[in-house]
Length: 151
Image 1: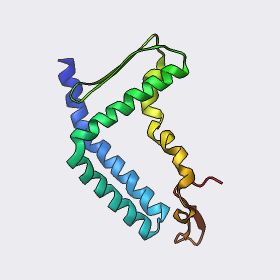
Image 2: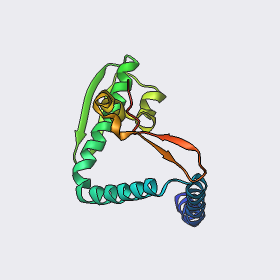
Image 3: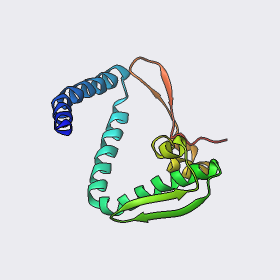
């Protein structure tokens, strides 16, 4: 009975949460005054991601699970916990068994971008061409960069 009441309340407040989130996103986009090409690039990237994810979801799910469990393992090693098993399956998810644990090991996949840090060494090879100076509508200059400008 408690579960039914909790689900009912959640179902009833979802439209209000969605409306509030949509309103906040709208305000951020309109106040920030992004250049048109930035919004276009974001929209195209978002649409391509959704299409790509829908087509390859079954295959990418294993990669996502592997990355998730790898993050648990890496944080376990940082805290000197001995790994006993590392399992990733296509249909049953994955698991990592360590000699101990703590809340940082448990929460690591939700705050640590493992893939970003694994790709960081390749940033050296990204050409400086990917950086540009753009003017926003307020006349202030902002430095827009790929995030990979080293040296």
